[in-house]
Image 1 (cartoon, rainbow over the protein chains, first blue to last red):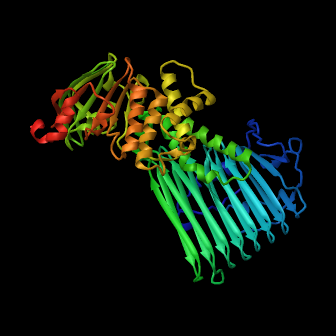
Image 2: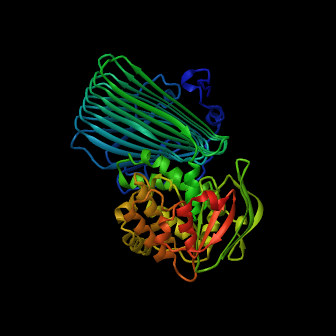
Image 3: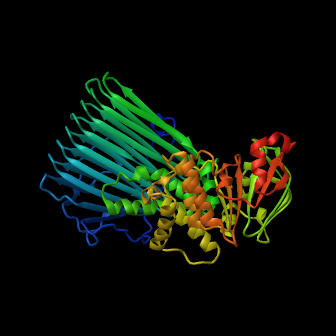
Length: 356
Length: 247
């Protein structure tokens, strides 16, 4: 397979490192055994190497089949063929659906489509584990007053995880996406969220933790096309060793999108001076009656707080872990599903403890 | 318990302590007074091991151990407590979580069993009640949004929970009104005035010493102790100022 990948000369990909992808795309799956980690007891789907594992799944309202979700996104367009679809109306299943993606070397591409009818609600928790390149395209359409909560944890032991979301929200619809990157592989998170109906609400954020020579990279665009929309991007980027965590978050407010409220909070934490955090908040506003706040800060752990804790007996490693946990916790607190929130926080703590 | 011999320390390459010697025995309360810039806070931070406070000469032993050889958290586990002049705010970490971590890390270091959540909360409640500190405040992030007086009371709650052998209290009286001063003083007396413990009070004013009676008062000036006396020395300093005595 010949891959046409973007390069760092392309502004949207300037902090990306896709160099591992051609080799992964050419590699065969190695069949490594990874046990899925389920959080809840509800409907669940397991994908191994991009293939639906029917025997290990209990799909509930989710169906499997060809997906019609065309995109010109350079990674998203690779995800073609069979995938999963969740289509719900307001009397449909209201609980949490869990999806675990196990990569086993090589590359796997899965498209997905989520369609929520008027007043429908859904909660989806996805986990990416294993080794290899997992590439996903998720097309989301929320009708009037539909509500979708997504929590995604990227926890692969190696390789690369690339996620492309394309979402459209009708009036009063709500989409909350929270992502935790706590694995050992590389990551690229792309999202384009369009608030097409008035009074729509979108929240997109999370915490990306990187160490060694790891690179996490997110590029998020939220577009307000209609009036009275609200959007929040709350990201916490942590980089240790020689790792790089990068985040480009853009809010676009169209001419007719009056009374838009946009908020961006991008905060970076460097655990070592050799690490890199790139933050790029962008606002592009064509309407004149909007409230958009954005903040971007990069710093180190508070040395006074570290000494204060150590002077009480807390070990230096533990003090750093506690302060780092505090740094990322508000981003993960947005996860609505309580067991998922606990599981994600526990994963983050495991990452923090592994530094010691 | 604590023996400081000829201690020299510098901050940012600037010599602050210049040959300080002091011995504190169990059961004793010592007060160190002195003008601004005498090196009072440098002494407390140097003893607690704060990075950037470099010992260039001298020796400090604590219960026979070389104190300067220990990391800050090891000094805490050995029984040393520093009450901060400016307690630090830690957003996102609750007092309860912080103190339980601290106490159990110390216990682990000493080879003792960890305290369970329930036992810890009982212990915390006793200390909080004694200092007029609500459990609600203990559940809040460390010192965040606390007034100056609340922060100082929190230091005493922490001291009560941790139950150290030696407390170095750096201007614990600053920023307290007279009622809060009494509460904090009662805390110091209740927690620390026992035959096997000791206190080093660092203060600018004699006021605190009316409530916590020192056995010895030392005057620190120019990075060394220039005079030592009993409780009456504090009154003399209050009357006459540091100018003549420290000279």
